[in-house]
Image (cartoon, rainbow, N blue to C red):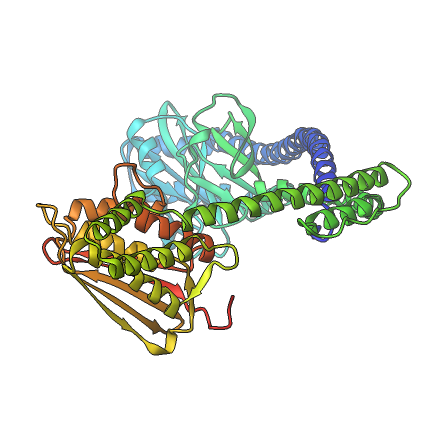
Length: 580
């Protein structure tokens, strides 16, 4: 987004955005913390209020049923019938008891079934719905069997929803009460439609409202099937009659009806709580981005206008190179203009110093190249003069003239580097033949030389004085035997290959052992020989001069096997005849 702006502008934007973001995050953290505290407080108030109302409704409902139970157990007529049946059991007395229970049931429109069972297993129930088998259903419940086995007194509902023959959900309250000194297990089956509607109305502010009975069964769940709800562990982790806590599912408020051992759990889902944060987050984002956008829209243009002269000067500095004209002055009337003037003066001084250094380096390079080109082995001149002395003693005047002429031509070509650093191939071959004349006199024609030069390249140019040092290496390093005798043959092969001129100097001498050959190649690769290496003056001298002329656009290699001679292969760029 900001790549088109200057680096300083981008830096200012990043620094401003960082400081602004840090301050905003700190304020947002404070706002969110306060909001979270208020959210939990509101959630607690909403959940506790709803659960308390539901608990009061359920308590009133269960209290009425409990009082109805007490009223049932205090009926004199029922006591008399039960006493008569206990003294003399008969079917007629059973039917009378059932009729009394049926009369009691019809006194309450929400009461649909009443059942009593004594400790001996005698069962009595209201005659209404008796043929539906609800008595068997109730007696088959785990809670009923638990009360029967423990002979305990307990008051808590069980849910009979889904029983065949019932159109509406029913709740059955079980309790053990004494009648005439005998313990009876009493079951009252009530229509739960009205109480469930009341609970649903009072729990509308909650995400869910659940009621668990004393047997850890879900009696009611507002948002689904109660039979699928399992008893949550957090109900057993706290002995308080009411408490609230927050977890990953949301905020839970628990109220326990001590009278009937029922648990009411009201939950406000976490998603509902977080939804209250949605608008707050949107407001915070708006507070963050809108001022930031306005600030950036104001900072960027001002910064660009102030820094554009620096960018202009930076571009000129970046484009400046040695020899280029001095940069132009950027007129701003401030420190940027002073910096521009200083840089202009600096570029002028740099160009002047660069010209001086360049001239000095050129003079040093030419001197060094000439020194390498004119480098001669002193023994060569000394030995040649000895040959002339010997010929003079023998009065071989024609041979003296011939050797002296050859030496003169070799020295003239070697030392003549004022006009050119290149020479025609044909002239280099002629100089090499003059060198051969001297060597034939010295070694009594024991070394033969063969020339195979492609005629098409005779007028091409090659670096001056490179053939003779290579041939000299063949004499002293390839053809010299252990007894000091120099004998063998040397071949000179010169030919074009693509855009290169290839020079191969071969001999049939002793060759190089692998260790020495490896060391010579290493010396040539780094252009730094050791003083004790005999190849230093010849091949390395040539390598240095060629690198001066062609930089890296050449190659030199030595191929040799012990006892089979050696070959120096030199590849140079092909210089046309008209090159100078």
